[in-house]
Structure formats: C-alpha cells, structure tokens
Image (cartoon, rainbow, N blue to C red; front, side, top):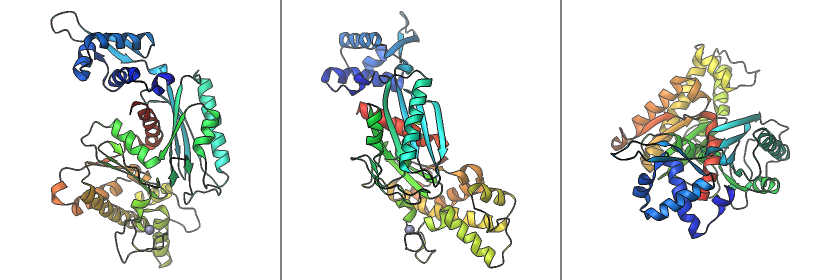
Length: 396
Ligand SMILES: [Zn+2]
C-alpha cells in the first residue's frame, strides 16, 4: 500500500484517482466511477481488477438495480494501511494509531511537565508507535506515514519545532521532530501546526456547509487554524497564536507580548487568573484561593457554584473573544467557526456569550451565513487531522 501511494508515474495517477474516489465516496459501482471519471470502460475494468488483485478494494455488496443485474459495489480495504497522528501541545502529547479511514484504533496521552524535554517526548513517541505496531500487527510496510500537529512556530521544510513559548520544560528549541522519527521509521513524516490539523479534521468530519473555516483552541493560550476552500492556510512561521494578539481594546489590559488590549490578555488562563486575583486583592470574595494553582477545572467549578468574580471574568473573556471572531468573520467571510477548549465544552454560558457577541459585531451580510459550532472531535481533532493531512499528500 505504501509503495502504491508513493508511486508517482502516470499509470499510477489513474489508479490512484479511482482509488481515491472509492476512498472518499465508496461504496461505488463501476457505473458511478464511470460517471465521475469519464475513464474508458475497458480501462476502468482493468483498473478495478488491479485494485482488487492488490486487495486495496473489495466487493462490498450489490447496489440498486435499474432493471438488469444489480451492480457490484466497491469499497476500500481498511486494514491495508495505518497512519500515526501526533498532537504535541503545551499541556499534553497524544500519539494515535489510525486506520485508513482515519478512525482511531488506539491512542496514548501523557501530560507535558517540567521534566518533558524534547528528547524524552520523542523517545516516548517512538516507544509508543513501536508498541502500537506490535500490538496491532502493523508491519513497516503497513505503516504509511506519520502526521505531527504541534504548537508552533515551525520550520516545515526542515521539520523543526522552533521555539514555542510557555512549554513547561526547557529545551524546546529547534527540535528536529521530523528527522528524529524518520530515522526510526522508514516513512514520510509531516509537520503542521496543530490548530490547522484540527481544523482539517473537523472539516473532513463535518457535513455542514462551507469550506472557509476558523478553528480556535482556547487552552492555556489561544491557538487558531484556518481553512480556505477546504485547504489549510499556512502562514510563514507555522504559528497559531497570532490570532491571540489581535487588538480588541487599544487601551486594554497589558499582554505578554508587551502591547495593550490583545485578545490573549482577556482569554488566556493566566490572564483570567490575574483578573481574579486583582479582584480578590481589592476585597472581592471568591471561592478561588490565591494559594492554589488555578486550573480550568477549578475555574469551571467556581463559576458553576455561582462565584460572581469568576463568572464575570469568564464572561468578559467571552465578550472579547466574540469581538475577535467577528473581526475575523468580517475580514475573511468565513462559513464556519469551530471552537474547542475546556470552557467551550464544560461551561455553556461561555460559548453562548462568544457566539452572541460575535453575531452582534458581524456585518449584517454574514448574519445568517456563518455557522458556529463546538468542535465535534474535541481532543482527537489534532492527531486525526495530522494523519489526514499526511494521507492527503499522497493524493495531491
Ligand atoms: Zn499580545
């Protein structure tokens, strides 16, 4: 399967074209494929025979008859290949083994702590991939490739994670993630920003309208990925945090970048913590203690228990987040906005306030044209999308 996907000769172009159609739209009959491709009938028959002999596709049943014999339907053989999808973020790393149709067969997540140097993380990744391969009888020939969705900035060409901020462990500087994996596994390794891979995964997963999508992960920081015409928008440096430094209040709170009023200075966990502490210092009563390490879990617990300070800080964050999203919609004419993050999933008033505010500041023209949603794949979006983008490179 790997050879077939890598092969780039003209003969293989047609073979891959038919395979891809069956992959994306199967089960399909010969007549369906004929209509979709305009390939000569005899050629199509030969191609399907070849795909059947190689066991890339199989006869999955019979379609509806239009009078004569019902047509044979073809589908791809799922276990002919496997892909690894990886998510490297500031809080965790996930390694997932996926089938050809991008369903997760097994995944493993470990937290990123102050001891997680790049060397240790890469070693963990390699060991986990080997373990998955052993456990699921995946041979080197069956492993098609590895997709890595990481926090940026990145050097995609050289396969490096450059110098991402706010990693809990030092040493994350020019990390050769691609070559480190290629040395051990004889496969193609793709590196892309995790927010972009997540956006791509949600796009493939969703049947909703539109190909222009903004996807934001509001975790420790704020990361955002974008698709235009269903294609990942690659900025130069692979940084996904630029959206967080959009100015939403020119006289606003100080940001970690030194400017004032960046979106991040209202939406990051750290900025919310600072705001809560300020109000406690000014005599406000809160369930949050300045002694404890503030996590999203504690924040959500306090808000749900009716802690007014926490509720107000969260909703204020949602207000500015909504303004930032409205700016993006007005500029990019987006079809869909997908949001991911603990507050999005666990604290409904946060999500509702973001959508309400965005709608308030959007141009009238887009009022009914933009779809807001929570990311359906949640934390699996990054590794699934990384695997999907890897697979995509063989078809384009
Ligand atoms: Zn900033």
